[in-house]
Picture 1 (cartoon, rainbow, N blue to C red):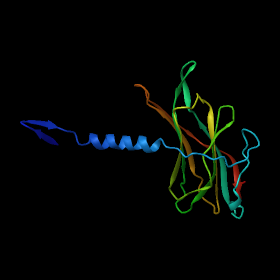
Picture 2: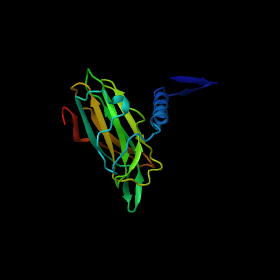
Picture 3: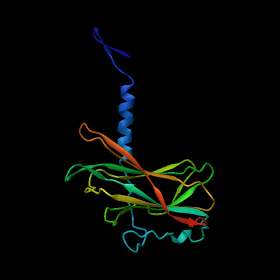
Length: 192
């Protein structure tokens, strides 16, 4: 696009503006996280006992899983200095016809201590919907071997969700990103 200013013409690349605005919007909205309220009684740092809220007692669990997802809030770049990362947990409901209920999303430290409980109440994920939970890059204190525990249930037989953690950082001129996949550690309902 050409812009005229007096007797001079300036060439402006129109495509740059939408890209810059899109990145700014993603950064502004993607860095917000849900403020957690502890919901579950745990028997220790690595408790994986299924937990249901009072209102869910009448729900018949036909399928469900507890999933362990490795997550890294930092990696070592120069020993002993960790390189901080932003971690995003993604829970993808890949069932085309049925919703699933997230009943537990917890973030644990390298030592197995609960750092953050992301759910105040059960959360419904509709067909093909994705829920995201963010661990901010700042303030992670070098958690290099952290993990998420994700629990989901459904009243029908459904496809298991895809659960992944994406770690990313673009500090200085060096960028780093990688993905980890969740692994089922316990089947629930008729599956268990």
